Length: 46
Image (tube, rainbow, N blue to C red; front, side, top):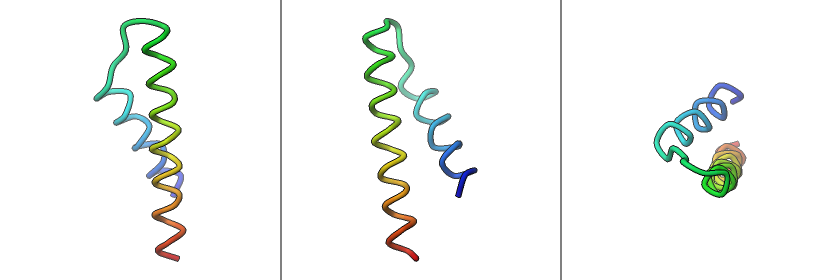
């Protein structure tokens, strides 16, 4: 599961990219949402 979360975070940063600190904040927020969504999906499968 940790590998899936790490891969999701890496993909999120690579795909979104950021040019400013404001953009970085939005990217981090989006990554957090992605992790939450992934965790919820895993929990539902269990």
